Each structure stands twice: as structure tokens, then as C-alpha cells.
Image (cartoon, rainbow, N blue to C red):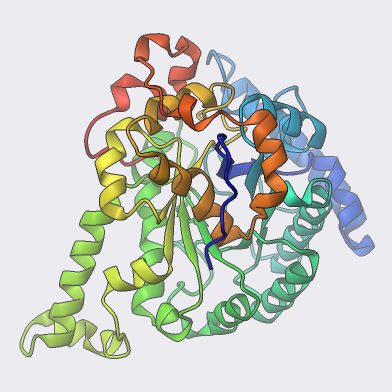
Length: 437
């Protein structure tokens, strides 16, 4: 049910994409005590790995480690876990509420080959799952410091379906309204693909507790190796497709059919891919379902027989796009997707995010939209999906958020600070029609 928005001259700016996490050593208190000795050894190895990555990136003007991934405890990394700093900087940036995805290395995660890549899989599932639960417990404490302003996205583990269901029930009790972070299961994963029937208890539990499912760019990619710089280039070229594929995995396996009340969010993959992808999925659906002779019906007929809606109809009913740093060139694309489906995000504290120039970014992009469309993408959609109390946010918005008039006032690229152009949403070189991120 969409909230009734209060009358105000200010936007109530909610970022549907932000990241957080504890620094490495702080996770220990959230682990069960039986893991503490092994945690100390793991934490030391991670700190040594961070030092090696700093050496790898030493010739870059600004390294990925400056945003604090992998628990790097420098002045940038402190943004991941300092509640006071985050609130202060977000207020200065004109944002009063955020959806929080994980960002730092959870306990017992093996070191990634780089700060951009998912860590390799290991067989010690017990420890990996214990580490993810530790992050969730840290997250619950972090959210509790500003509960009306934070929707925490918690993690589950495909290797333990029963334990994941219990974690969903625990998270519901803790008020983690950000919902479930759906892990990826790429071909090099040791887990069954997301369309496996084995995961049905997870989807059912999320639906029963009103928890949205979230899939974030980067979380479903295979391991590209450590052959810098080519491996990182491959990651950047392919990361969005690996994230998008979970959409059709869940559609064609009947998850949306069985759970029509379940919300599904794809974050930080842009909007441009959506119209063409839905058209292609609809075409496959029709050929699989109604063609008597084509190979599509032979291979896909059994799957689509259980689907009462087309992919685009499931999308309209249940799916949402977390469109981080939405670009001006995406204006008409976002309208074709439906501005009631799109949620803006700042991607704080990542280096490519709009902070600390979000107010300029909002003018650059949202001056192209009507006020009603802008309210949908900055406030109403995220408030609906993540259950934010907009009345509680109103006094903060009137103190810190830009006015509707200000956001509707166009700004020229010449007025955008040079440093801000590192954000894809403010770089004129990235404003091509069809841009996807």
C-alpha cells in the first residue's frame, strides 16, 4: 500500500542504495564465542590482504580502498560504520533516509582478488554463514541508532536453507525492513541456481514476513581472477548482466507466480536494459507457451505452463529498479519503465556515488521530470517497498532536503564540480542514450 505523503515544499529524499559494514575487528563481538580464536587469525589475514591491495593500487590517484571496502580502517572506511558521520554527511547532502546494503568484508569471507570482485567460494560453509550472521547482528545494532532513517538489507546463505528461513524470522523481529539480499549463484558457485526448488522455503518466508527481495549489482558475478587490469575490466563490462539474470530465473521458476505479494528489487543496474529485456522475455514466453512446433516450446513449455502472467506483467506487479545516480539521458527510459517502479539512490559511500554533490545531481537529472514523477522516485516508491514512515521523516526533510522548486531548477554541466563528474550520473561523457548504469 502506497503511503499518503504529507504536504511540504521539500522533497523527502530517500536513497534506495547506500552501503555500510563494521570494520574488521569490530565484528568479533557479534560472532558466537566458539569462533573467536579462528576469527583473530582470519582478521589478521584480511588486514595483510588489504596492505597488499594498497600496494597494488599505489599508482592510482584514488584507489577503491578509499571507500573502505574490505574493512580498510582509514578516513574513508570510517564512513561504513560511523553512525554520527553518516548522518551528518547525508544531511549535508540533502538525504534523510537510506536503504543499507553490505559493504565490508564479513567474518571468514576469503579475501577477494580485488576490491571490485566477489570473494572465491570455499567449502567451510559453517564459518561463512557464521560470518554473515555476525554482519546481520551488527546491522541490527547500526539500524537501531536511527531506526526511522535506515532500512537494513540482511544476508542469507544458500548453503543453509533452513538457517536462512530462521534468519528471515529473526530479521523480521529486529525490524530490518530492507529485506533479504538474494545471493548470486553463478556457474562457479557451489550452490544450486536460483531457479532451484530447494530455495522455495526462503521465498515463502520472505513473503510471509513482508520482506522485499533485493539483488544488487556485483553480488552475482563469477570470479574473474586476479590478472589486473583485464580482470577488473571484464567485471565492469559484465557485472550488470550477471545481476539482471536473476530476474528471469525467479520469473520462469514460478517464484512470482506462487508469491504475488513478494516485492523484488534490482539495484544499481540502471534502467536502460529493462524495456528491451522485458520485450525479449515476453517474446520467449509467448513462443514457449503457444508455439506448437518451435524449439522454444520444447525447451521452455514446461516452465511457462505454470505462469499465468507474462514477464512484463510480473514486473509491473512485483518488481522495482534501484536506479542509483540516475542519469539525465535516462529520463524517457525511466518513464517507459514507469516512474512508479524506479527508486533513486546515491550509492554512498562509494567513490562513484553522488555524495557530496547530490543536490547538484538531483537538479541535473530531476529537472527533466514533473514534480509528481520526482516525488515517486525520491520518496514514494522507496517508502512503499521499504516501509519508511514519511511523517517521521518530514521534520528532517524540511531541515535538510532541497525544496521541490530547487530540484526542478535546471543546472548546466558547467556548474557541476569537476570532482563530481566521477559519478556516472554527473559525467557528460556518460549521457548517451541506452546507457545502462
